[in-house]
Image (cartoon, rainbow, N blue to C red; front, side, top):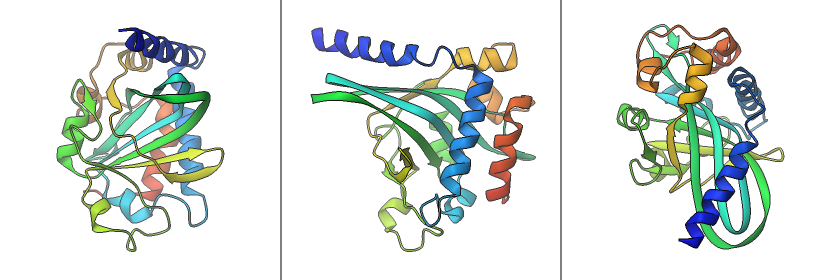
Length: 223
């Protein structure tokens, strides 16, 4: 009980750090993260994987705070392919924790590629746990994915990170994703579910224009 209370305090503390950033500003940050990770020479997300992805989740500044108990918390967006291009963004939060003797804090940008329709449908549910509700693997880096293993290619979700300018695959097994209803209401001025936003015909907000255009540039093919 004490451990769970401490973990909740850690998540609340790092969660409060997001209070000063608006939903629109977070979309701008998500665009910057995507631009930088795709622009890294031979270290970006393989374009052929992005072209195959059904959805992408971008969580800029996933925060990890640790003092005996580690906690993760982040807010970002999910966008999926639609008939007219990439969908409007739906807000998501990432939560998770691990126990261990660790002191310090870390901030990591996280990107997830959802590689099939089944994974996308699960991710749009009310609550989703990586590794439990869908198979997940650290994604390969480079201009193409051809040299990577079949194991990673079979995963429903491929995950990436950027920490202090270094790009790598990241293990997010056990992290929980859920809709960020507050961000959705802030962006769309009404209460909408991620299913309604991403799989419906919700017009995207102006703040999402740069991110959607950038995704279209690197992955114009429809699935």
